[in-house]
Length: 525
Ligand code: FAD
Ligand code: SIN
Image (cartoon, rainbow, N blue to C red; front, side):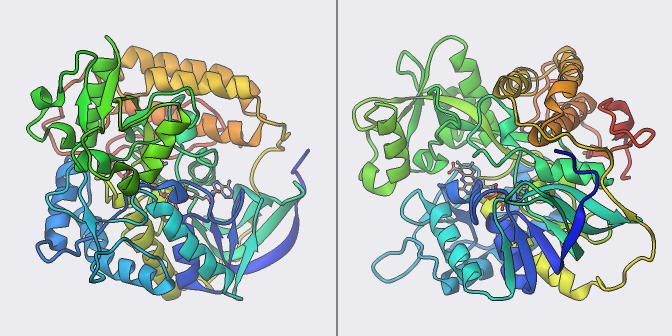
């Protein structure tokens, strides 16, 4: 199919792309908008979230303490302004969700039960149905959206590219449910398309997480920050299942141990916090153990396991394992993207009319390593902040310039699973937990050679763009910091922490896969 001549069929004040926690929060708070989502309302990573939402609610806790833990995890790359916004905004957003009907786990007196996860100095993880927090939050958000007459829904509708008028985003080109090209014009667009985990052979992410928003933003000329900062969860169940079932970090918060094939608890040698060391430290330790045998998560001594962690227990049983009787084989797996579309503290991107929130955004909250359960928090707080910013900004002030439609005729063909798998394997091998210059350079060349074939499918085209950005950023960052570990630069750069800023430079109106023009070194573009 050719999308050279789309027809304008709709106009909305605001278009929100994505219906996870960030998109639905933004939509509910902004009102009078449309939500475009590529599968069904509420699908995406949010629904799969297990451990919970971090919020400084306990009497022995404070936003400043939550902020301090977040800054430690971020290894110098978190923006203190974003950290303060998220940590002070958390309790009110939990109250908002409860008002919408989200039913979090409480004690007999109705007080929220709070879990503990790695990097948090106190118990502050709000959860629902044990380890099924995302499903409960999304149930509440989805039913709130369905009750709202001022929110139009476009399900099974894939956003392809942003439409600009001069430097301002003024709509989105989509393929509708019948795969017809349609432009939805808008005064502003909110990107809430989630992550890009499907770029990796081993990931906990659902099928929707193909980096579409990041690719669209890059092609439209927005600035991307730190694409190389990819988080690997230490404990996914080591099976052939794709995605890999997550074994929540809350299990380790409840006392689960990591064992090698001799039954030795190796994390006690690695870090004073053992299994509750920062996520990147535990993930790399597991990766090292796996090179000489299995790494195992022992849950046998956890009381009321099935009641407290029904999702984890069900995943193990589906794989034919009984966690009450045997330690579970685990592997690290791609889990989260800290990098993303650079925003200010209110979700504004570098392009007028374009806002971003949730995993697709780089708000500055997470730095080089996201603290557990800070992602749902970010989706809530920054979803709400985007809505408030849109209300404040003069989005009616439209430019008189020419509408710039997305470039290039696109022959949309179906994804080729074998080509996708090959790309995902390359990314896992060269841009996974351990990286080096030779591997990253070879990866860039391989990805470029895959582009002509993979780039002919809608999702493949996005994955190639995002893979190039991750590899370019990883090559550029000649240090090891948080989740980014370079064996050829194994220590943190002692100088001022710096972000990698990328912007796509189309050459002669052709989207080139040469990563070199994408890099703007050393300064904010
Ligand atoms: P998502 O929830 O992923 O939603 C993205 C939306 O965008 C989807 O609706 C998708 O269909 C849509 N979309 C994507 N591309 C397009 C397109 N081209 N056109 C139209 N629509 C599009 N974080 C925590 O804080 N706590 C946890 O306990 C936790 N557990 C997790 C467990 C798992 C298994 C996973 C995978 C992640 C977990 N995370 C957790 C991370 C967290 O869930 C995500 O980072 C967060 O939910 C992202 O929210 P989002 O709204 O940005 O994106
Ligand atoms: C988990 O439950 O381990 C995931 C938590 C997170 O990703 O924040």
